[in-house]
Image (tube, rainbow, N blue to C red; front, top):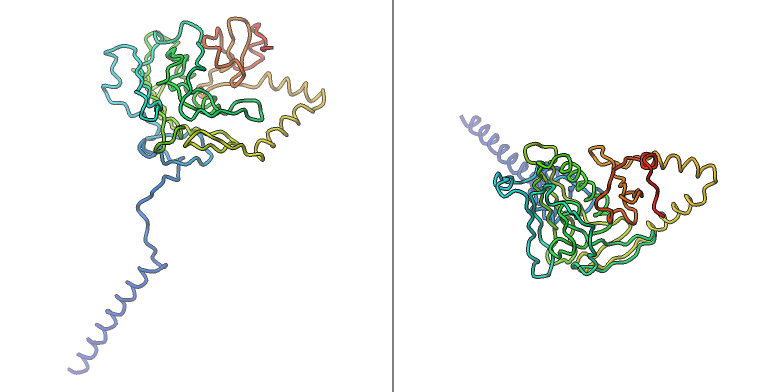
Length: 328
C-alpha cells in the first residue's frame, strides 16, 4: 500500500512540473503572443480597407487602391432618382478646407460653355512649385470634374492636388463616367468624392471616389487615391515640398537620352509613338479632338482646358487620319 501511495505522489508531482513548464514556454519566445490591434494600417493594397481607416494609410507604391472590396457604400435612398439630377457640396470646415462633393450625374449637368478661370481660388495648402520636367506640382483639383458638372471657381469643389492625382488617376475614372453618360440622356450615375485629411493638415492625403450607375453596374467603383507625386516629398501640414534630386535627375537623363537619339531611331520612335494607345480601363480613347481641329494628349498643356471635345481617339495616327493636327 505504501508503494502505491508513493507512485501516485510521483505522478502528481510530474504533472505539476509539466504544467509549470508549459506555462513558462507560453510566456517566452517559443509561443509568442499574437498582436490583435494595429495603430496604423500598413497594407493599403488590401481590398477590405474601410473608409474610416483611410486617413491613417501610408503610401507604399500603389497610388489607387480599392475600398470595401470596390463596392460603393450608397444606401437605397442615395440611389433614388426622385429628385432627378443634382449636385451638392459640403461647407468648408474650420480650416477652410473643402469637405465633400455629392451628385446624381446626368447629361443635364454637363457644361455647355468653355471652362472659366479658376486661378482666383487658393485651396488650403496651396504652395505650388515648378518641377524640373516643366510641370507644376499642384493643380486646383476638382472634386467633381468640370466635364461632369460644369463647376468653375467653386471653393467647395477645389482642393490642392498633385498633377499625378489629377491626371491620370482621377481623370481616367471621370472619363469612364463621362463616356457612360454621353451614351444616353437617361443614364444617371450616383457620385461621391471625399478628400481625406489627417487631423488638421491642410493638404488632403488622398481622395475617396465612389460611383454607381443607376439601373446597371456599368459604372461601379469605390477607390482611394493617394495625393502623391513621384520624386517629391510633401509636407501635408502646410503644402510645402522637397524634390528628390536623384529621382528628378533620372527623369532629366531619360529626357536627354530621348532628345539625343539618331535620326533613324527618332523616325522609328515617331512611328511607334503614333501607334501608342491612350485608353481608359474600358478601352475608350483618351485623346481629345478639339473643335478647332487639334488633338490633345492626356497630360499635355491644353488637355484639361479642352472640355467639350468633338471626337475621341485611341492613337495619334487615328487623330491625324481624321484630319487633326498636334498643337503648336
